[in-house]
Amino acid sequence: MGAMSIWHWVIVIAVIALLFGGRGKLSGLMGDAAKGIKAFKDGLKDDDKGPSEGVSSLPRTDAEKEELKR
Image (tube, rainbow, N blue to C red; front, side, top):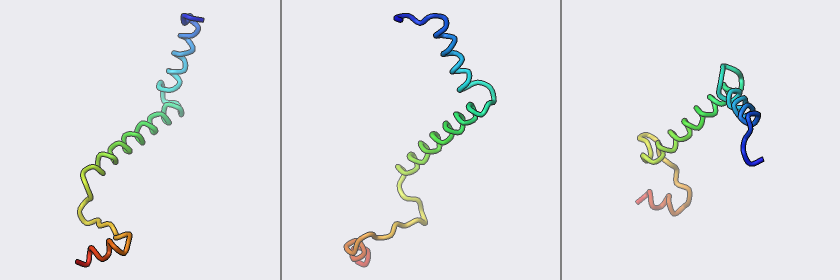
């Protein structure tokens, strides 16, 4: 049980081939998931740049409203 036999490697390679190989539904799902993760990371990078022009946040409390009136 300590070393991986040839059958273990065959099963591992088969699972990898199913997940990443070919143009099957599963590989398409993996590609879509990767695109989603990349879009999420790009969105986080955009948040670090600060608020974009033309978009303003609304005051949440009365104190913030008073501060904006000054």
